[in-house]
Length: 146
Image (cartoon, rainbow, N blue to C red):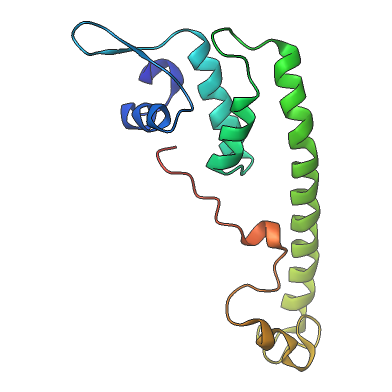
């Protein structure tokens, strides 16, 4: 399954432990995956690539039928839900890009002194870190075992 899915064996075990995929066992204890698990793994990879968290992936997979390969209609329903998420992320990235062009253009590269991005050091009241980034871009979206 590792060669066909592109996932390491440890990732497959992790996703099984997390309840995202299932496997049967041979009498010798080897894992065996049904064919539809490849589609679930492709789904997990696609979801990771667009930045969904493990919890969001789990939620989406819970809407798929158990014991049968999902139909194109099943996948379309989930992808429609992702469209709004992607649009939000695109908008946030465009705002980031446009703000970055302005900030670099001023030459100061200092959040304390930048009159465009942080007039009168207003960001200081929010604490340290990338507090001016859109919330969607501040989320920790690292994926273990991916």
